[in-house]
Length: 449
Length: 99
Image (cartoon, rainbow over all chains, first blue to last red; front, side, top):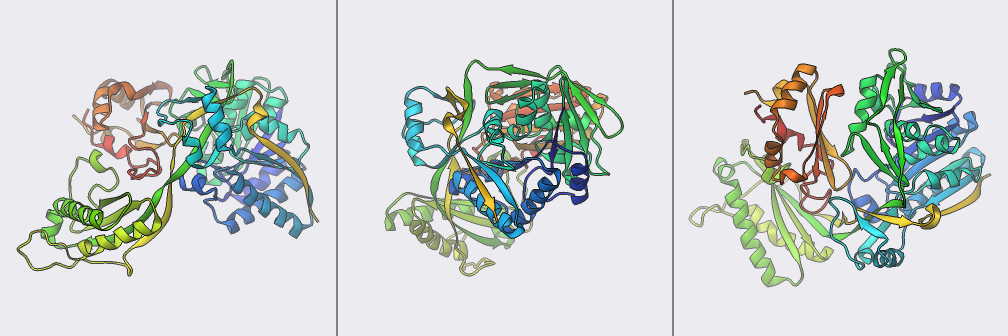
């Protein structure tokens, strides 16, 4: 049997400290926590930075390092620094060294990096080793060079290699959410379907319980399946909360693709052992005939400057789209005469259909409308320049020629807010590997006093 | 005819990675599940999202009283034209559907 303690759904999100302490008394074999995902958008992978504050991350990581010391077991984090790019891994390694120095701990640290070079990926693409997944954007061999960061998602095999070094702490770059949880149970011969299924249920911590905010859960893996126990006293796992979690952020509720195969939970059964503990058996792991890892890549998509104005005049509110369309046409034409380079101007109606755009058919307006101008251009300077040309329109543009010049409400001076570089995801592909470690780099170091 | 939101307990939407969107309709009871499962036309759902029905995946999960849809994201997460980084608002489109 292998017990995996999961402190929370992500480092930096916070958790119930009493629940974590209770988890330590259960003598886990490993502590595993996720460090990120793509869910916050392409900025983090594009820039190779973390979403969460350094101070929050350090405070929580210090507590987990302390919990690890008490339990005397490995502590593993996957997708370090939100995006798992090499620079984000270095960021967490730096924090870890700092904590070790401050606490006087002597630790063996294994670092697993997932970053890929553009040149290697272009070669792999030309060799037919990179293939698209459903809904993948078009790419060619040149696409990779446009990416600021490319990462491959490590699976259980690479985490096992890191654990095999005997490390106290494993800091991994991009991994699948499940790999850090399934790695040890799989290495020790637990049921493969149960290992991956339990890992999927546990990846978000207590999200698969009645008290998502309590964070900490314990999953026990064995020869037939897994048993999930929440560590928060109020939290309850039920067959419904556990089985329903297969749906979460998953496009197929029965199937989960992982490096080396896929999980099929069609035949899984969920049994309540009491009113808060659930046992699951019957999940199946189907190995694939080739070993593939998913790739993520983000590239620069331009530079943005935004402006917001507030329109309250009832006649303008009633004709707001007309007003915006007119500004967009006139300002675009003027800017094209006066600047060189590619740019776009978009006006979004906050309070009308800014969330859903054309998919929103309700068509209602309130008493006021926020108008957000978004200028995207190929350089920072051009983006700001065009936004400055947009300003007189947002300030004074009349609905018709034959009327007194109107003035609209601006909450800020200056009204132009540069957002800097903006990025976009551009890969939804898999890379075929001959050996699971081929695309990854593992190193070990001693840290501390 | 009743609005979907008046029949079910919750409709949520979320990213399933940067390229897919998934929508879970929690019916709350076997009766509500039967109503939704039998009454909700996949072609109509595809229509309100403006996509061909062939690209919409549907899962009727009787054990959980849930009907789930997955579709390629209307805009890739975070690109210039995307308005909803987490895909949270797309569930709203289904709430007013009459069945």
